Structure formats: C-alpha cells, structure tokens
Length: 99
Image (cartoon, rainbow, N blue to C red; front, side, top):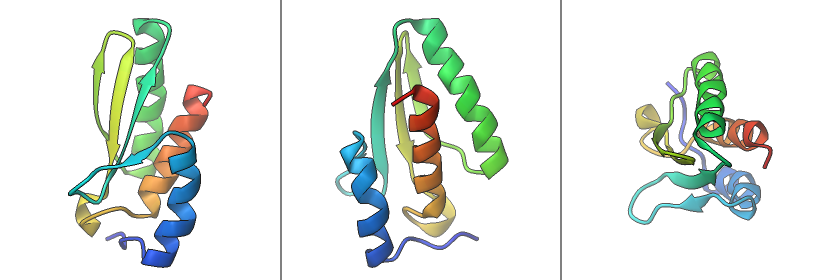
C-alpha cells in the first residue's frame, strides 16, 4: 500500500505541478489536467505512451479522450488521496506530452 502525501510533502511536490497546469479538485484529494494535441492520433499516441508508464508504475489514471483532448485525474485510491505515485505519474505525463 502506498502512503498518502503529508502536508509538507504536498506543498513541495504539488507546487511545480500546479505551475505546470495541474489543478487540485475541490472536494477530492486529486489533481486534474487537460492536454490538447494537434489531432486525435497525437492524443491517442500520448495515451498509449502513458499507459505503458502506468503499467510500469502500477498506477493508472482516470482519463477520457475526445478527439484531440485528453482529460486526466490522478489520485491513489489505496491511499485515499494523493501520493508520491500521483506526482511521479503527473511529471511523466507532462514529459510525454512535451509540456
């Protein structure tokens, strides 16, 4: 089981993500970001690359895809909120998106 981020860990880990376009979800211990690509193929390619990393990390996003837009929510269900896995996955997703 993965531990939920402490208050100190949250402050230091989430600040750069918020600066990169991630947002906290009100009423839920989770973060969200919307990625917009040039077309469906790029969006789906991004999701495919993310899926490979999600399997490696054993941490899977909540997401949806409509045409060139991918909406992502990250939280660690086992921990009951945000964990270091969410931070890792968010950083990896930004890297894969070229953000």
